[in-house]
Image 1 (cartoon, one colour):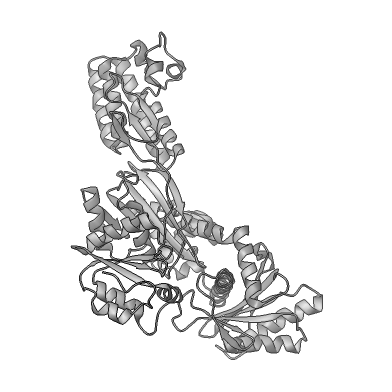
Image 2: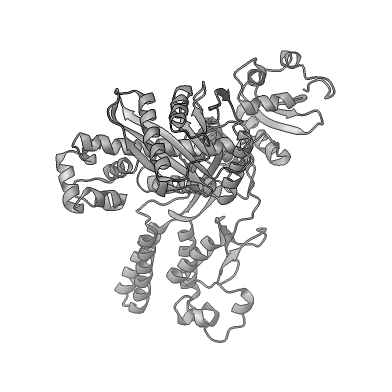
Length: 611
């Protein structure tokens, strides 16, 4: 079904009157006939009607709707079918208003030439036409080579090409360094080599414990038969396998899984992906999808998982996806993924043990990478240029200062001042102000006091003033800043307030400039810069407030951790010697304390590092 011709204004009312309520996919086009957006819906009529309501649309959605000249819908038999069709259309048409994942690289595999009397383990990238077994895909060539290196050490399977193998008259260097059993010159029986090959493939399938059990039984059998040479070889294999397991920290949990952690910050997004094969983390990859429409962590995860796995054989589905957040329509997504795989695929967010360690690692990487992306020189320069254009400044601003206030019902009030220069945050210039002698909870008075102390000191000492003073707050806080600057006769500093909009969502902030309320589009680099400095001021104020509050109450931070009583505090302090050493310790080290379980160690670590 389509709307009226593109040269006639789009009649949303007439279009909606004849749209079905069945599940399906809709495609939006502009007046030139170019695709704008592809979406799915359980109820097409209800979903499409949400685009054409009178108010309440996000800024980017409004921009999309203004460009619509034609809408086509395709009815499907179920919501799952709609999801599959949506992902296929997005990959094929690449609409500008959809979040697009660009991942066109081919992934490497480990190939086992099982048709050969003495199979080889080989690195493979490209089409899988040769007869044999393929294991993978692996996230990088390095991950394949690491696995091949392990297999050489433990099982001594050849990794040479057949042409090299068939022309040997004596063992090569790989045999001399105990990385190959030299089947090329008959130094290993076909039966023994076949057994080693089978164990190598079991290793690639994650069946490490089964291999160890089999090798132990074979070693006992060989020793009983007085075949001590074979028993010694099997013993060395068992030891090598145990070392590999210890190095990889498998902790008894095998299997295959992909771990996905998402972070959205200051208009940018990062999804960090860990690949687990046979209980080992074999690699990782960071994705930076472009955010075209307003979205949150759950929606972005759903879109990413759909685009990455559905209809793409180069990304085989593991039996388990471990996610930092529950994606939208999780049951629907799991059903579609299971249908494609032919077996069950589970989506999990609540995990324990080693799986939680993997998820924590992915989250930590996503946090680091999104911060690194925001802090990149190219990104910062672009945002400063957009801020200059927004403020209509003659010169590019090179120094920004932002203030925020933090307290608990008026207790232990702390003001923060953070400074950004052309390279981003300049932490050496950060300052905190303990606010005294004001009415408890009076944020205006606290802001006035902090600004007075800061700019009196700067003016008196002849220190550089900022090009822009950013205030985390609305018109009242901005007025305090203007009064302080006027009293100090500072007229070279512009004041900008950043207030939460009516929805209190990131990207919908109201900016207070020269008494007027303004808004920037959510994709604006200038807005992202202001969000970044505002969030940094908020973080710095909260950490200072908590430290001051804890000191005023005469309590250790350990006393504030739920579940940590006097005996556990005593055991922690006895083991580490002090709070600073506890804060430096990782989860594994904390868990070594006799009274602290692994789960409690994770809670302690999370509490001490929550800022």
